[in-house]
Image (cartoon, rainbow, N blue to C red; front, top):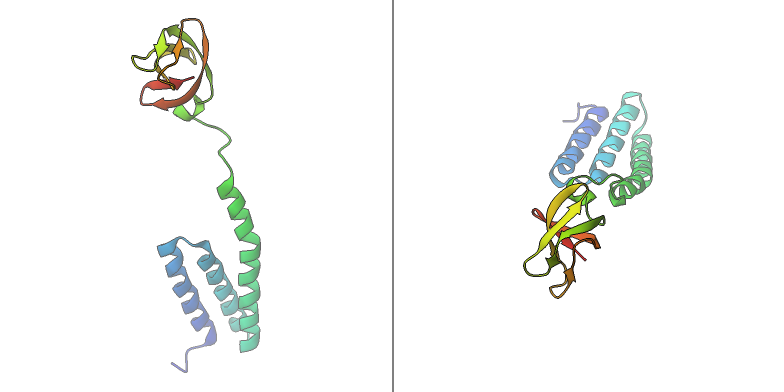
Length: 144
């Protein structure tokens, strides 16, 4: 084991840090793995052990400091374009057949006729009235 060069150990460390990245999906392990590859490059270029460790630490910390906030912003962003039933939530519709909380009725939503039910079981909406779509449950629009 003593005859294995330092850059090989760094590559082994990079691979070992890549395993928890795959198993836990924690990107920090990937950033540490890239830092280990940077340590391997430093060792391959003839840098001393102290320099290798410093390069590993600097690259790993820099990646964590830069990439983590960017990834957190992307994870927190809402999708800009809603599609499917998500695009219908919050839209206005016109009642075509009396809608109430028990038997339901029909509305015209996005040019199509939908079955609808009132959100409040006591509410009743007569034909011609505009209502807001709160949710979609299956093929039924929940309105208020």
